[in-house]
Length: 173
Image (cartoon, rainbow, N blue to C red; front, side, top):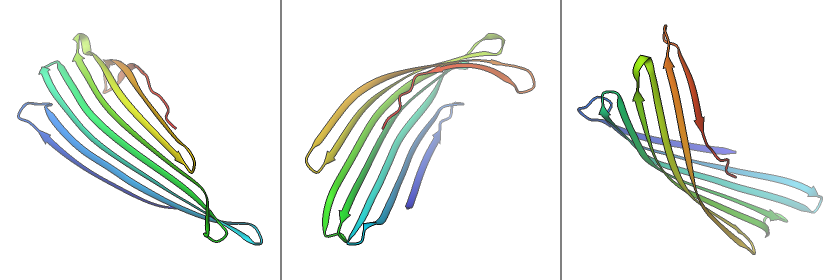
């Protein structure tokens, strides 16, 4: 297995405290190759490649001294391909290609309240597109999800805090 990972990030702070723009990119590729010999006259060569790219833009802006708003966009693309060759690579027996694209946007707001309390609420919208190709078939799937989140925090003495949070997530294939 061979994996390459890359990333780049740019941040710009504006003249106002807590006002910031961040642009980032993360990329990676993994290659795998496995040779197996199940029978004396046969050899199986299994190859796979995984690619992932993430582009993200985040912006935070203070509305007032005790109120901060954040927003952002994120685009993720993943592709996975698997191929199996039999008899020393002369014949391909199976091939699978999977591609996933996710476009997400979010907005969140944080309020610093009285008596060292703070509240953060957020909402994220994701649009997902999955494409799966095999030798004789193709399957497409598209869906959208809305994810709320909330965090309540009480700052205590000696740099301690008490937090209660809620978030909704999904698990993808």
